[in-house]
Image (cartoon, rainbow, N blue to C red; front, side):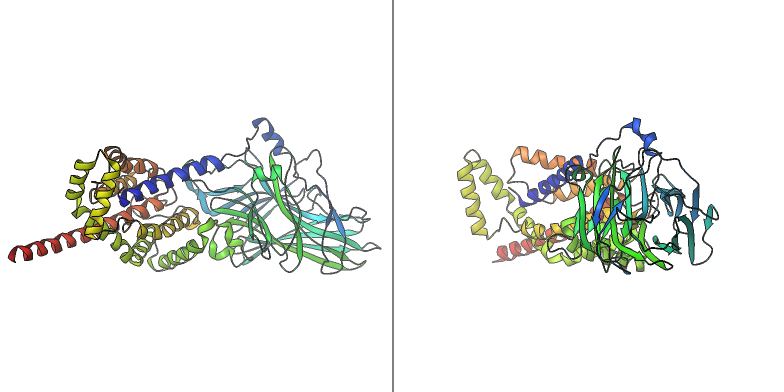
Length: 561
């Protein structure tokens, strides 16, 4: 069988594999519409009794009991926070972040409206909770996500480089000031708990932080599967550092009291991530579990801290709520950039993104940057591709002989194969010559595919004319049709004599099948494939014509002799 045909069929199977993977993994546990209203009125629980923790910064504590869920919740005051990067709603009940929008990233169909990442209304319930867990036998209390905080004002707007949003809780001689600290231009939020102990005995508690959401993903694509769900990171693991624990995994095997030095826990979805980033220098306890009414939680409990009578202690942590910007995430915590999940092709995808990003810094347009990157990749593989095209051109040259063999021996497949291999040997044709160079390039092509799928920089990035968002489909399907046309032209440059009638029919259908698939793919990805096809056709046409001229000269010289 023609090795070029093998390449097209491999691509077809790749497309089918992507489709089946989406069908397999994108199915989420159903959300019961009758439970949606209840979601909005109930807090998440953190049911961890006697969670072991390590020594804190002030003293050590052997265990803690994170509060159990309450059976009902009355919404308290909402604090509205406006920064240049985030618009948040914080509830004074628990100090939970109940709603998060990103003004620098618009909604899919209305880029002027801030993207709604988190909220506690509707089928997608998604919010952040934190508090301080106390030991089971503790005499002194601490504020949890059930506690009501006092605030001096209900609206905060960033005017300088930082914005502090303090809220106060008092009980039994313990005063805790919980403060969210925002920095201009950043999606990273510092959280501080300042504990003042005015009681007559020591106070002890452990900071906990968790993200809670339902499995529903309103922004998932029917054609492009990307993982949505909990993940955590163990930098010191000898086995697997970056770990996905899907909603279905949590149902069967929840994560309980996993001790990890440093680390982080996150909820990820396409283009966005929310992460709890604790102290990286101590051993923290991680958990992921199913809660009530279709909710799932992933989070971390930090080591216990003790504050002596008459003293003040400070407990701090960080949370990230925002886009998956690779250059930003890697500066926050080890491995946080892995939430941009390139899978097994990470080793190739990361340098490809690095190169694409640097090209964009020069070009200033992601569409043109994709074209430049495609050209550079094509140049890098020029000689490998040339070998493939030389092999194809040589096979094309001997098509009449192969066709004749097929006519003479086509009914006897064994004899036909023997005669064909003999011809290859006599003419020094390597039937795998067109296959191996392509197989070598395939990992790079697939890695670049994931780069273009996962890069938030492509989201709502304009190229030119009607292409105003490289992360969504071409609204007029021009790019997919052009891509299918280039695929058809490339087929015409390939020999077909070795194919039977059925194989030829399949090959003729492939451009139409791929055009149909790519009609729903992101425009940036289709632009890459289109440019790659144009370069491939140009190179193959050039090499084919070059060989034809050489053959003509050889024939002319032979006639003169």
